[in-house]
Length: 103
Image (cartoon, rainbow, N blue to C red; front, side, top):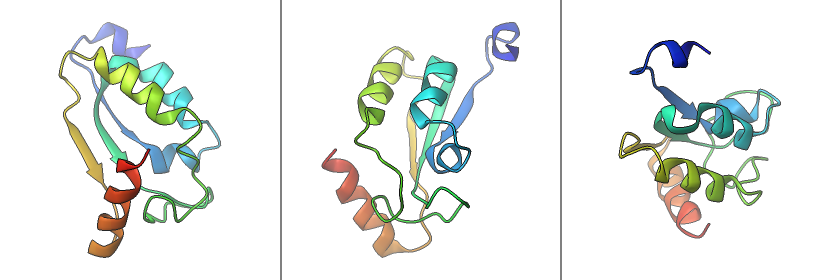
């Protein structure tokens, strides 16, 4: 893996992009591990990058995603400190923040 050859190499994990790739988001976290430097959070219907509010698409965040993300990020030595709600509107941002707080 390229990351193994470059110790400073990191990645942005974008859950919306992962969702429409047909690869479970948890698998991305397992592979990227503590190389995740930033997390982009948004929803879609699994077909295109719609940047919907969390809970408004078909992304299932209750399927162990948050638990796996917390496990991974607890071992990243503070490297992952950026979380981005990546929506198109302020109301979608607010609703996503509230949705995520309930997970």
